[in-house]
Image 1 (cartoon, rainbow, N blue to C red):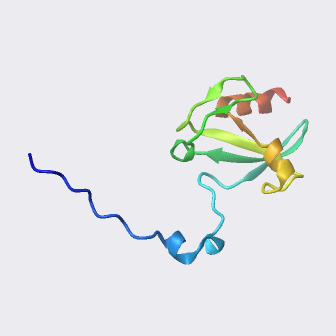
Image 2: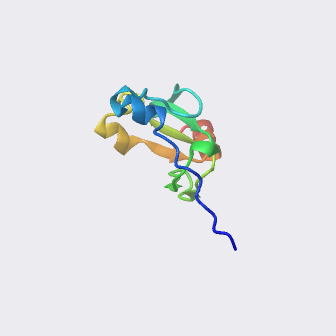
Image 3: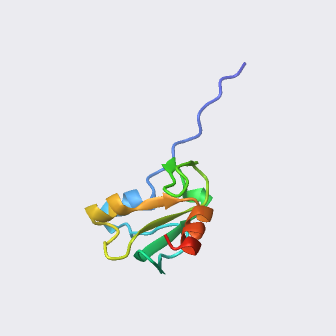
Length: 106
């Protein structure tokens, strides 16, 4: 049998060529929106299944959010997303759990 050769390696990506410091900060999914609830204002980002690559635990039902599952990320509006406190406050919710939370006023 003839040996198969590997395809040639691709060159550097445009981000590697440009340098990490020039890479724009972008998030996949919909833009962040502010939602107001009984417990305050929340920044909400809807994540598409294509960009979801990790397991998370939904605080609404304590069940697993599997990779490739569309879901919601929410954090208190008064904390900037990239600050250390916001990372601790940020939670991944099943979309249905977040919508149920909105209806029940929790």
